[in-house]
View 1 (cartoon, rainbow, N blue to C red):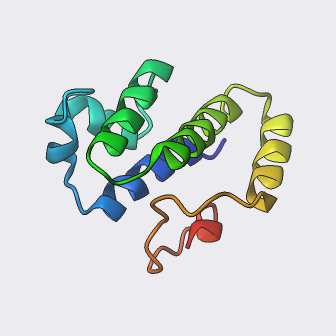
View 2 (spheres, helix red, strand yellow):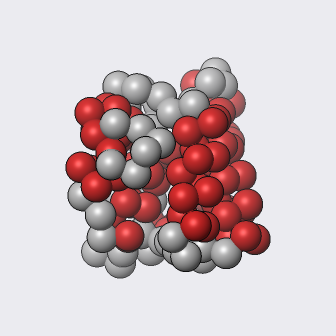
View 3 (cartoon, rainbow, N blue to C red):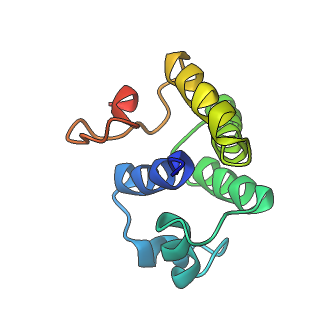
Length: 120
């Protein structure tokens, strides 16, 4: 089974912002049931949805323009890792974990998920 790094990352972004799933659903880029499905990995976010979410984060002052671009690139790379073959996906995920990514809304230190431990 492939890891759902994007879905976990989006959940942790929401938690880092201190928002509920309902609050994310009221932001206009996705409905509340849609956000729940994305976090539970039963729905995959579109590139446009990820872009709108990053625009909203910049508009609300959570990130600046450079951080927004870095976050969008990170989310898109996580999204497309799931479309690779299982072997290549594992290689890409291992490589991704070695990258130095700017500190943009990182996971709180209490997270113990090994897939997301590098964000703590």
